[in-house]
Image 1 (cartoon, helix red, strand yellow):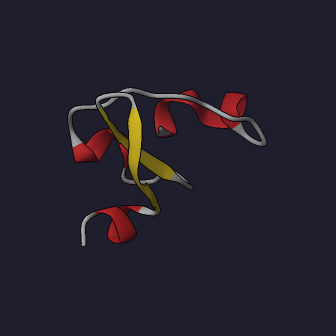
Image 2 (tube, one colour; image 1 turned 90 degrees about the vertical axis):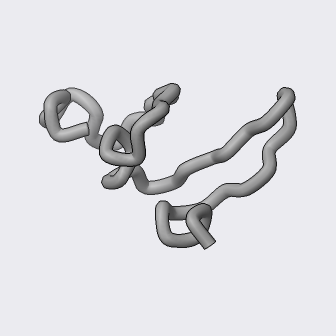
Length: 48
């Protein structure tokens, strides 16, 4: 999310992404399926 620069510092951003490159630098990723949280954590956590 480098393209937002300082505009997103210290803020919560909800992004819907199909590509991992879009969210690779996110502090926390939540994976949802059918309205339920399936996994959450950093990228390395949810890829296991």
